Length: 102
Image (cartoon, rainbow, N blue to C red; front, side):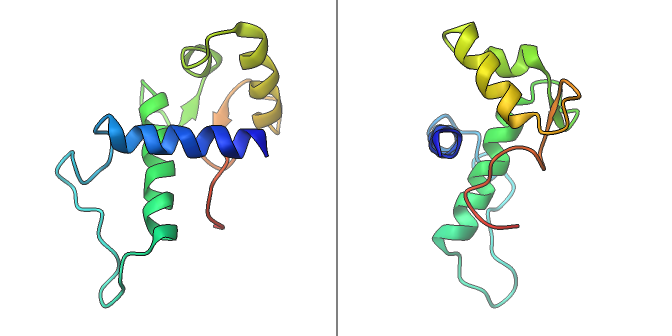
């Protein structure tokens, strides 16, 4: 629950800091004939939040990338271990919490 709330906040920050694809020039558009809903907007925001933290754009969050968004290393370490489900030292987009079902 705590990680979901944190990443919901990160997603909101992604919109606020201009990380949303819409502000980068690509449209945050629904599929043809579909109205954009809150769930779709949050899915885009979650993807944008992941991209904002993934500084080298390799599709994985290293410990250095992840720790850079935390003030204290002990909290970052605990949360990173929770997110890194396979224990490989990186958090992939599949391991990253989502506010919407995939």
